Length: 435
Image (cartoon, rainbow, N blue to C red):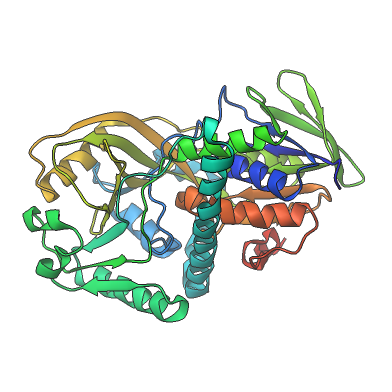
C-alpha cells in the first residue's frame, strides 16, 4: 500500500483535491496527475461561479429545469436553453429522461447528502488554510474572497417560502444559525445596498454560521496542487488519455495520445465531463452531461457587504472577490464539444444585474463558459469504477465542484487507500445507477 502508484486522470479542483488528500493520508504512495490541457484547472475550475456556501445549494430539479428549457426555446435570452444539436442526440435524451425521472423520488434525501458533504468540505477548509498558510507559506496564495458570507435574496413568494423551509430544517437538524426576513426593510440588515435596489423583494435569508463564501477555484486548485507536489506527487500536462491495457479486470497501463505509456497500481477518473469518454473506453459511460454556465468579472464603484444569490426567473450569483465581483448565470444544455463563450449572454446577465442592483457604472471582463458535469441525480459519483478492480471515479459534481471538492476527495482517498470513510459513501456510489 505504501509504495503503490496512483494515477489521477484530471487536473481540476477535484483531481488536485484528491491528489492532496491521498498524499496527506498516505505520504509514502506515489501519485501522478495527468492533465490533458497545458496547465491545471483549465475547465470549470478556471473560473467558476465563486460561491463556496455549504448551506445554499440543492440538487437540481430535473422536471422543473427541463420544463423551463422547453418553455424558453423561442426566447433567445432565456436563462434555460439547449444546443439545437441535442434534439437529434440520442445519448442526451437517455440522460435527460433519467434526469427528469430522478426529480420524482428521493429529492429531500439528496438535498441532505449535498449539505453534509458540503459541510464536511467547509470543515476541511479550516485546516487546509492552516496547512497552506503556515507549513507551506512560501507558495500560499489567498483563495478566499472578501465577503461576510452569502445572502439569498428572493423576488417570488414561492421561492422564499421554499428556501425558508429548508433554512428551518438545517437550523433544527444541524444547529446552523439561519436567519430569514420577509421584507425589504429587514433585509437591509443583512445587505445595506438592498435599500437602493430596483426589484421587488419577498424575503431574504443568511446562514450566520458561514463567515465567508466567495472564493477563487483556480487559486484553490493551485494551492492544492502545490501541497501535493511538495509531498512528492508529480503532474504531467498535455497528457490526453487514448486507451487502456486491461488484464483480468485490472488496468495494467494507459496510453496517451502522444504515444507514452503510463503504468500504475490504481487509477482514479477525476475529469468532469471528460469522465464520459474515459468511462466509455473502460466499458461503462457515467451518466454525466455538460450543462453550460457563463461567468465574468465585474468592476463597479458600488460596494456589497456580502456575496449574493438573486432568485427569480433568471437566477444569478454575485461573489464578492474584493477588488471585483464574479458574476455567474445561465443553464444551457450543451454538446460534449460545445465550449464556446457567448459574450452576448454575459451581457444579458450584466444588464439584468445592472437594473436590479441599480448600478451606475460597471466594467465587465474575463468572459468564461463552464461545462458543469451534471449527473442524472445531481449527486457526485464517488467510488470504485464498475467492472474494473483497480479503477475509481470521483466526478459528476455539477455546479457544486468546489463546494463538494474536499469532502469528495476525502471519501475517494479513504476508499482507494482501503480505509473506512469518515463520511457515508453510499449515496455517491456508482452502483446506485443499477449497474
